[in-house]
Structures are given as C-alpha cells and as structure tokens.
Length: 405
Image (cartoon, rainbow, N blue to C red; front, side):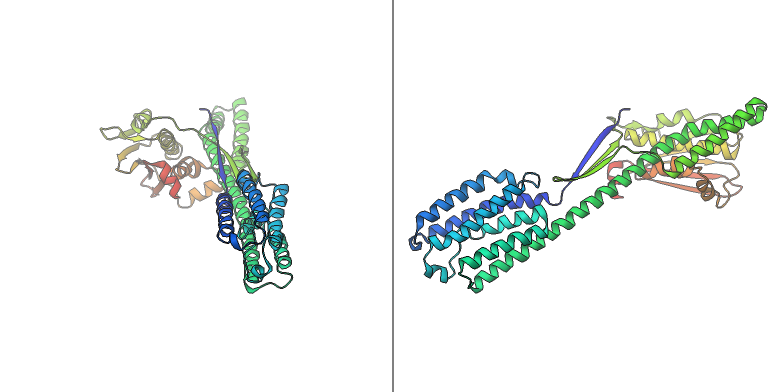
C-alpha cells in the first residue's frame, strides 16, 4: 500500500499578522476621522490632506505585506516606520502651536503603533524597542522637548506593549519549534514500532524457525541454524535499539513550524473483523463470533488481526504444539473486544519484562504496541499452570481515540 506524506503547519503568530492588518485599516480611518472633525482648527489643512492621501494609499496597498512574516521585509518596515515618523513631525507644520500645546493628536495618531507592532511581530522585543524608541524621539521633537502627560503616557504604552508582544512572539516561536520536535519524535517512535512489528512478525519468526529446525536436523543445517540465531539476536538488538530511520523533516519558516511525517493511508469502507480471524481457526484453535458483522476501520481491523496472530504465535511457541486456544469476538456499542485464551502452562512472573530486556518484543510491540497505536488496550492475565488470557480492546472510532491520548 502506497504511503503518503502528511504536512502539518503550526503558527502561533499568524493570527497576530491578521489582527495587525485590521488594526492598520481601522486606525487609518480613525486618524482621518480626527482630522475631519477638527478641520476648521487645523492651520494648514492642505499639508494634512496630502499626508493622509499618502497614508491611505500606503496602508491599503501594503496590506499583503503585513499578512505574514515572510512578506513583511526589512525595507518595508523601514519605509512604514518612516511614514509614521514623518507624520508625527509634520504635525508641527499642519497644526497651530496652541493646538499642539493643548495635546492635539499627531497626524498619524495611533496608526503609529501599528508600524511599531509590525517590528515586534517580525523581529521580537529588540526590534520593538528600537522602533518604539524612534517614535518616542519623534514625539519629543514634536513637543519641542517638553512632552505633556498624555504624550508620555502614549509613548510609554506603545513602548511597553510592543516590547511585550515582541517577547511573546519569541516565546511562541520557541514553543513551536519544541512542539515540532516533539511531533517528530512521536512520529519516529510510531514508525520504528510499526517496522519493528513487521520485522517481528516475519523476518524474526523465520530466523527463529531456521535456528530450531537446523538444531534438530544437525550437520550443515545446524551451522546454518547457528548463523540464523546470531542474525536473529543482532536484528532484535537493532530493532529494540530504535535504529530505524524515519523519513521526516522539520523546519522553522516564516509561516510557522512545519512537520512532515509519512503515514499509511486509510482505505475506504469498514472491514468485518470476523473475516480476518477465520483463517486462524483450526483443529486446536476455536473461534466464537457474533452472528452479525463486526466492523472496524480497515487499518484498525488489520492491526487487531495481526495482534491476534501474534498472541496465537506465542501460544504455539510457549505453550507447546499440543496446546489449545480459544478466540472470542465481542461486538460492544463503542468497541470491539477479542480475547485469546490458551490452556498452556502460563507465563512465569517477570518473564515478560525479561523477554523485553532481551529484545524479544512480541508482546510489547506486536500486541500492546499495535493496540496502543489504535487507542485501545491489551490486557494479559496469566496464572502458572492455568494458561494465559489476552484481551484486546479496540475503539470503533480509532481517530477520536488517538486524539484523546
């Protein structure tokens, strides 16, 4: 089955850029409205009109520039801040000294904060401090070096708010990179366990069989069996050590952190679990199933059947060829439960942990690992002398179950 690449893009700062676009338009309208409301009091309205014409054209034409960090370049930020500073200084030309002394707003008014915030979102708190310091200097020149209380309050507000936002953006970017790395590790672990299960269910089983048959036959076959045993140990060590590469890449772009993982696609339509379990029934394996179809998503049904096969393989391997096994399928409203029970000698206490430490991951990966990836559970109960019972429970909605983990 062909695999596909899934791309997840995460960007905490992208909503800030969208908010900045709206802020620039609204504050431009607000600044023009202030001018219109005080038009009769402005000493040189033509200067103000010319400036507002430039401001309106610049604000609307450059909206795509503040849509993302990639499009908001340094040259744009420089020109944007220059327009804001020019508007502050032109206020002395357009307004009368009396209105300036009376704390009349500057021509760009609070539109200036948008230029500073663009610096903050783009470059963090250091860029924000630089831009807000220039705005503070321009306001001091506008007030002839003697700012009013309102001017000081506005300058401090812009300075503190922009630095705080810049710092938050830096923290958000670091969090995105950490989350991307965590998703990479999770994807790597899942892919490694999937490959390890496939290897355990195929290659390792064949090598173990060759080793046993070679020891029984003897002669050259014994030597072949010995070599197969060595390769089995080496392969188990490799699998349990996690040296299986995973095709993935993470990058920190202007659009946010990007994580690419490779995953198996889902087939269309549910699958009847009973049809997948029927081949396992035989002379020493009994299958009890409901009369109606037991439906699961295709991948969940295949993984559940593979876990049952791994459990039956453990019965043959550890309980002996003469052991009997029973498979019980239960169709619950929100889950499917398959129980595999045998009449073997049971598993000695501590044996599973010892086997996992030796790289024998049949229960850890082929059974519990599969069920964990589906959002289900695998419960194993074994009493020495009374056999072993493995209960496999898979939720019918495996997508929601994985999301809750």
